[in-house]
Amino acid sequence: MLVIGLLSYILILVILVKVNFYIALGFIVVTSIASNAYLPQLKGYVGERRIRKLLESLGEDVKIYNDLYVPKKNGEMTQIDHVLLSTNGVFVIETKNYTGWIFGSENQRNWTQTIYNKKSRFYNPVMQNNTHVKALQNYLNIDVPLHSIIVFSNAATFKFKEPFQQAYVIHTKHLKRTIKQFTTQEITGEQFGRISQMLHVLVPETKQQKKEIKKRHLAHVKEIANPAKKKVTKEKVEPVTTAPVIVEPVGVATDSICPRCSSDLVKRNGKRGAFYGCQSFPKCRFTSDL
Image (cartoon, rainbow, N blue to C red; front, side, top):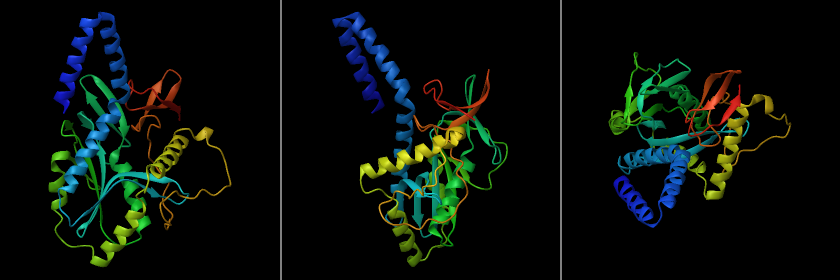
């Protein structure tokens, strides 16, 4: 598909050059700007689609839920990329479609991505997914094992010095093998049905519902990034779901996501001090105060 797209681009460019050189030049500039703006989202979408296909290939004995927004105590949401339910446990999966060298440790707040001489920081995905696991565990309120899995692109090179205890940090190619190593039945048929129903409730029935939930989630993330601008209100906010759900107390969210492109927000230092900036800089230039 990528090769076909590239050949189509070249063909269009050749035709435009024959028509008018300046039109062709304008086409190059416009497509370059567009690719810089939308490439991070496109890469993330492609990466998540690949994970979905891998999970679906595990058979009919499992249930898969993608892009879930789990309710929290204040009606806020935490977004989970994928949840796989099987009789061997519940697998909470966070995808990171990053390339280059990846440095970090389990208890280090920010990790580093290095591509040639360019370094960028992003929030520790193990900590991020721990928040997802705790929220889901609290929401389900069932004593079953939940497993945290962080999946990086196969193009990423791990530079970790220590093994991980709280999560499985793996490449996409090792996802199925990691899940299949759990062979002991930990969830009864009754529990499986109950969990399945509760997760199904979190799946929006329409695109409009999903849009509203995502909008509320991004607004909450923006409030975290800009605490000084957060408005104080006594009005109780109810969660947006497709059916009534039980919302149990849970810890404060630690998600740091760019409201423009959904990439991670990272702490940076500038001339005027520290601030939050988008991990996709310079493609996305969103910033906010600490």
